[in-house]
Length: 94
Image 1 (spheres, rainbow, N blue to C red):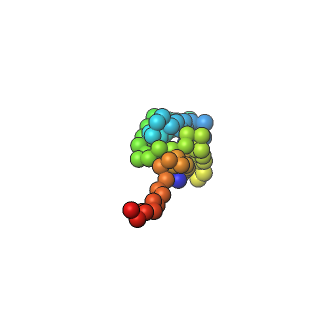
Image 2 (cartoon, rainbow, N blue to C red; image 1 turned 30 degrees about the horizontal axis):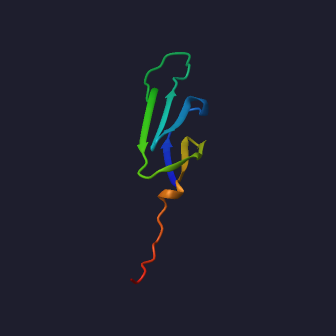
Image 3 (tube, helix red, strand yellow; image 1 turned 60 degrees about the vertical axis):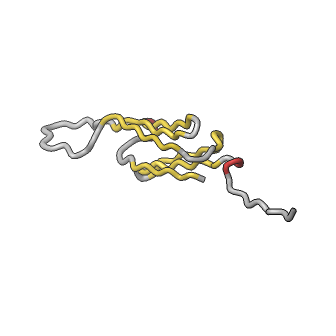
């Protein structure tokens, strides 16, 4: 199982999109600016669109993906394909 974690503080679940195309996992989203009243002296939070891409080295099961967002951390679990798992092969005497 591949486990991909992305820190997304302040991002809402509806503002994140997770896609798998082939062996590439893509996380796309937007951190929206909060509406404020009064004078803003300094801005320390980043805002705007973001895009993370991770290429997985082995084939995966596209229908066995689970994503959860808790405490500002997005965790995506992707199951490796049965074909991609390691298997020991016995050597026969000739």
